Image (cartoon, rainbow, N blue to C red; front, side, top):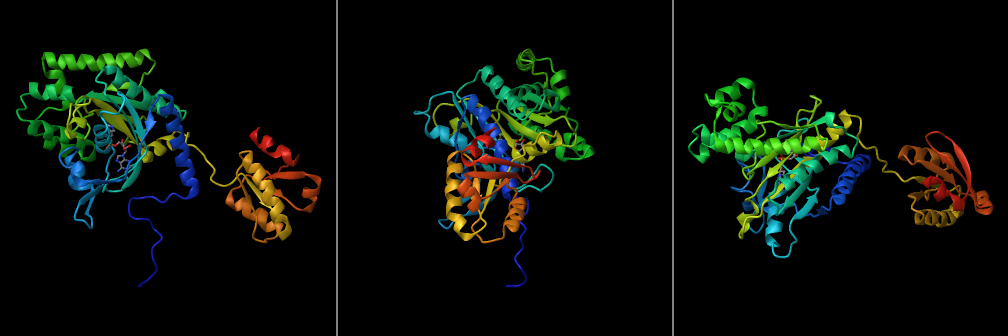
Length: 417
Ligand code: HAM
């Protein structure tokens, strides 16, 4: 072999060393806690899906330019999931007779997109998916948006830190009809252009509009009963949020979303700090996707929230979780004979819910303390003959150097304080 193997991960993906994974897992636990409190149940699936699941159902850009697709040894075309919604729709459709509707489910899968890696965009990310299926009512739209807001508030974010921008596919559709867009291709190409707006220079976007109005003028200029009805529905939804003291929900006609499956309300959540210009979450109503697997349509609404943009948001606002991956206590063993009694003590502490490691390597006590410090353990206990006969230990807090003498039976209770 020529040269050494690189230690770099594949382009656009991350390694998670224990401390990074502990911080991300802690954020996931916060999300899980909030979602379970609303009765949402966690599901999961394999990242491998037949490529046909995405073809013609989701988004041209994602399927043609961003999927990781390969042919397996049995000549099947396989895609690494670029999003979870088609998998969810497949799973719900498969068990439509057994499931109790409305279905409230969430998942935190890793998803893969061949994108140009940049701030907020990677080739693999974890994406919280929250979906409510089987309810067409605006109450479902309200529940999903309230949950989106609660998730960020659970980390300590306030309304002023983020805005929830909503619009509607059916509103845009009605406006396109009123403006005389004739075919669905014409509407789709207009919508796809709007979705790419943020990725293009202003002049290029304006040239590509080819004289067509921007969505706001399209909606404002038309005098049409269907548009008025759609607009009223959105505005009353916003008023209902205001009445629940959610002041950061706004109408934004530029929110169109890239996926073809959305049918009604669409929304994205943005950081109000311009440093994080990427959307934190995106979602909407997709009433026809589950029906593509046969049977009656099942209305649905949900959103996806990426871990990269979430962590950027939390860090920018100084509310990112800090989590330790190292064991709480390192028990030092002055000699070989102390290892067995130290293991017994460790087991007692573990039974009390404390994470503990025991030194079994024969280093000097000084080196053991240095090792515990480097590992990031919180406390050090030396467990030699004296401690074994007295039944008392000195719990040393490594960061401050402070020591507390305690009976062995009092250690777990002391840490719980
Ligand atoms: P999406 O807008 O493509 O929607 O993705 C949702 C969120 O995932 C984005 O707002 C962003 O936070 C994150 N995200 C997307 N792509 C990347 C990337 N390359 N790197 C890092 N983060 C990324 C969906 O995927 C829909 N399936 C969501 C949904 C669920 N709609 C209904 N239910």
